[in-house]
Image (cartoon, rainbow, N blue to C red; front, side):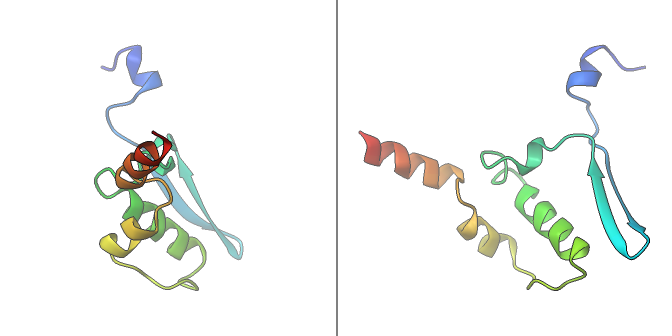
Length: 87
């Protein structure tokens, strides 16, 4: 049995995908993994990229995790660089 806190931060993420008519949809119980400061955590960037590739039926080029991390606008390294430049 879950706790009250499970509503705010469930221990297991929920992600569902399916085809609807001629389109595709992805629904997530939490979009925290897509926030710029979370994309560098684990495989979040790769998950987001896979979602985009699946939704577009592979009309965009697949990339490796390392390629994705180089293109993330605000990963931890970029944020550290921005902070250094602001000082």
